Image (cartoon, rainbow, N blue to C red; front, side):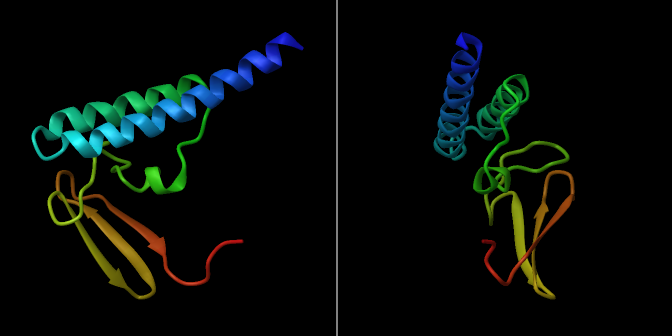
Length: 105
């Protein structure tokens, strides 16, 4: 029983740390984008180590190919095309497509 409580506690802590790292990435971006990218990299590693999924709003803030922290208008292009939001990473050119429409339940 002790293992389950310890494991769930570490996962909760991992989620908190991931959220903190993304908040720091947003703070660091204007002065040094490299630090923001490092925060994203650390958040991903914490998530993989503790087998925790990164939440959807946070997952959409970085490029899945090059793992750069995305800021619309600065290093990401956001367009709406045929019922989808298309986010283009200007560092590597990768396009992420997210559906627009009915909210998930």
